[in-house]
Length: 402
Image 1 (cartoon, rainbow, N blue to C red):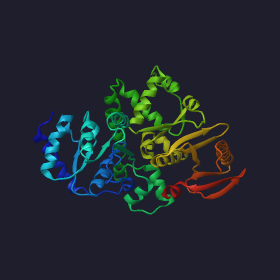
Image 2: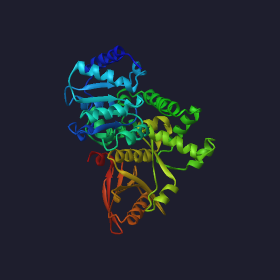
Image 3: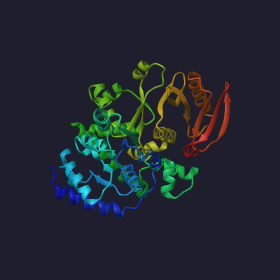
Image 4: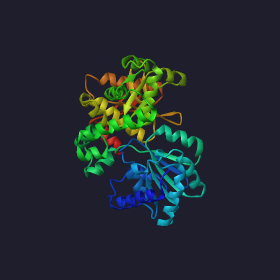
């Protein structure tokens, strides 16, 4: 429980603070969100990726509005019943049917109050940093009442807007190494990303799930970052980190995914049962973060580029698989059960890797009955044809601008 006077103190502080904030780089996701729609809107994503900025950009599209961020430590005693004290203070300040709550998952039972607002025909937009908590709560109390969006670190086009540059291979290389976390782009200070990683490990994984060995969790995360773009098995990781059970490792990896730090994808198969049996691949949320967690990773520019393509596909809400039979292909993108794209990522297509990259792509295209495929490179263009299949070779930075 928290006193009404304490809530007011935080409200007054936050109103003054956000009134002085610059608008920030416009986030692309804003244009997809219709404030006139009555669904509860949920913005989720990793910490420090810009969810709060996106929330305020939404809020500033329409005045007046109610706003509260639960990241303020003074609100740590806040309980679900305190929302009605907050409602009273909101009404004293202004009349509005528009409510914005930042990091609302910090309040246990928050969804009960949000449902009350929704039933009263209020418009509610919230953010949260944990996928599992939000999905679990939404699934029970807010079924059919909400629409969710995932917020990512800056895309390439957002990076260009933020740094006031035009697209091109040189600044794309900078983006490839730096990634899209706004604070790191501004400061170039590696500690920004390392502190973010430590914060994620302890706050979103160790504390939240009551884990007893944070050192192992942290080392596992660094290992996954170092091996982004590679296949892995829970059994091998359990042996490597002496965790005893593959189920324990599977739980740890799911915690990383819930915190939006890593993502796993399955090997493509027409059999769902086979998909679950095959090894998975791991990718990181941001190329700058995984580069700084494993300084040697930046030397493997091909996997770094592959990781960036994966995140871009994820940002576009695509369902993604990888392909492996006789050969390998990086991504098979599906939509409504059908194959939308077959994509190979190669930093530099040359005589040493040409046959391997082409043959893996062609095999994936033949398996999925796809006529057109893509090879995405750092800065090469071409149009190829083999076995009646058309292949477009294109720089990743041009593809990301489309």
